[in-house]
Length: 287
Ligand code: KMH
Ligand code: ZN
Image: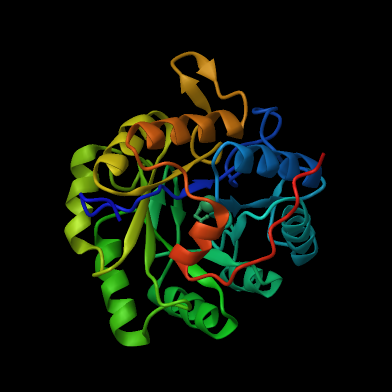
């Protein structure tokens, strides 16, 4: 903690791929195992401590097939010591049982979306029973959830979830405010500030601004003692008219802003301590 009461470091999560963009439209999107591993290495080198993974199949389509999922988890763990957080959100078309089955790949952490939200023209469906099932299964399997908050009401759901079903594995509550989704809360400093009083006592938060809200959300999060999530899942344009070159470019920008805020990027081991994840043996840097 700093004298301001803010955390001394900034936890930076990279979300490199997502489920929404097509490789054909975004050639720089990492989709193969090799591309994801290279991205993971590059992003750790410039300040990421957590990787939020959506997996693609051999045709580059989003998949929850456990064979693909396990392969990527193993490859990222082999090459980096990033905290591996799997998405249980998947794509808007994914069935609930397949989203739950992702936990069989035994990641360190997994996302847990706290409510249904319009997602552009689609609906990202997260009913209460699915939320409870994900929360309970993660408790039983020793997987740390990152609670995804797309709207203010999702924080009321989080309070109810913890009250009725107890704390997550590891005991620490960490939420990610996903802002600027067309259908969710706007990616503004005002919306971020409105969420803060509704976070559970002792919780930490990160924020993610989709599209052009990336920078304002990042600056607002840092100014409020929050952590950051960036990546090509959420942001494909670095500046007006300038496509993102790669995920490391976004992580480097986040790390630079975190240093300016005098809360430099956290190491992977500090991230594990913060999130309540058991330590792993660090990977030696390759020569
Ligand atoms: N792809 C979105 C429908 C998550 O990863 O948990 C949901 C999503 C959230 O990305
Ligand atoms: Zn995601």
